[in-house]
Length: 141
Image (tube, rainbow, N blue to C red):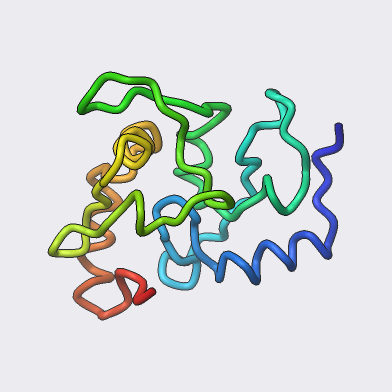
């Protein structure tokens, strides 16, 4: 199975994901760090290199996700699938804290994904605080 992502597929994913991580919504133009292409279902678990299985991810979310596909909901302990940005709506599973610095999981999938991808680690929260004060974050949609 090839990991090569064609120029056409890259453009399609970039246009769809609007230059931001599909998990934590970090924007490349705000962070100054290029996004990577994530196989939602990892290739190591049979995931294909198709639009339905590729999304943009910040490097941290991509690295913490690794080849995980499920994780325990910290509230219930039940193992649930991680958030699939191609099959689910972000706003159904996540919300921003009142100050805009924390991603809050609204569902088991959201809570598990926040923990597994370490979406609220201290360094990103400090960066988000600066982005919020500049009016760059959180994304308006």
